[in-house]
Length: 107
Length: 119
Figure 1 (cartoon, rainbow over the protein chains, first blue to last red):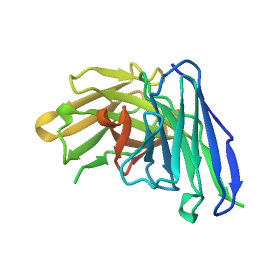
Figure 2: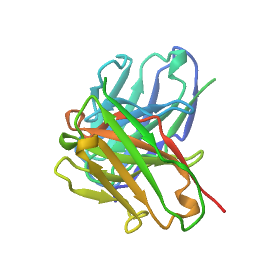
Figure 3: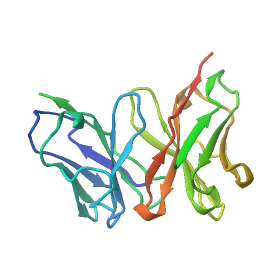
Figure 4: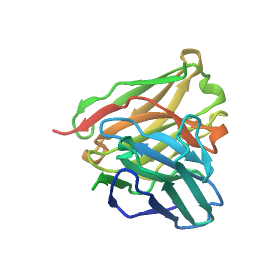
């Protein structure tokens, strides 16, 4: 199975800040990578697919980049509703493994 | 509206069996990939099983030989039969549409059903 390693595991930031989360795959996955946002008690929500494509309805302050083994999710200007947990997922081969998550907290 | 609704979760003793159901609406299960993803309490996400549009199925190693995914196209429902349940299977189980148009990302999630394995 492909292992996904996210960092940091948690980050504190303020409204208006720029935040970057990284994800590394244990082997090359070209751009088969998705990012999700999850709030407590809710199902995850797809933000980014194919490493850099913005899912319909997702604000443009969310952006993704990378290919091969190294990927990033950037939130350009944090809004109050962005405080949540973020997961990456490789979609190259089943099982479509997830990173362990990054909890984004209010500073 | 595209929607997934899970049912069938509950409290079950170790070694027991449970069948989860996922009713799909707004799309056809025979033309899409449908997966089960679980989340143990306070933990991350784990892809458990998938059924592709052609009917091919795959399982995570942690459930292989114990869980079976299937579908009834006439009922637009996907099932997860879970046998020989263990404490470590305790989780919220989400039904998920794996979107071909979004490079296999999950673009539709159910609300989740809770499975608790405990004596």
